[in-house]
Amino acid sequence: MSDKVKFEIEFPIQASPHMLYQYFSQASSLDEWFADNVNSRGELYTFIWGDSEEQAKLIKYETEEFMRYQWLEDEGDDVYFEFKIQVDDLTQDVSLIITDFAEEDEIEDTKLFWENQISDLKQTIGA
Image 1 (cartoon, one colour):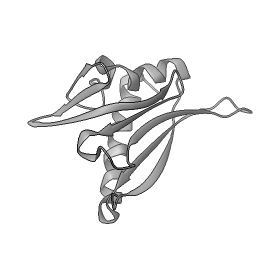
Image 2: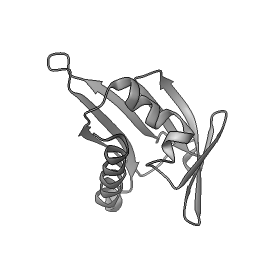
Image 3: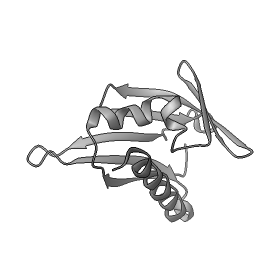
């Protein structure tokens, strides 16, 4: 069992849920904002940042709602990272909720990573 701690961050995004979903469900869109390059082969995704390469497996999804990935190094542990779209019933405001896990002393750095990546996403989609 992993010693990683689960956390969630919510980011308001001015985009339609349909468009937003495309940006975290397709390798060709993920490499526009999440990593330098992303390749997919079925459920296996390879994320490349500079000289670093990490592989993750798509473990669960609901079309136009969420995608859940698990790093291969964490396989067997109950940890993952997830992109989830939430639409406010009253205002129709769209938010992207990121769920991730990190070691206790790495949570703030991991949140900063996500803030930077989502900032790139917002810039990419013009939100």
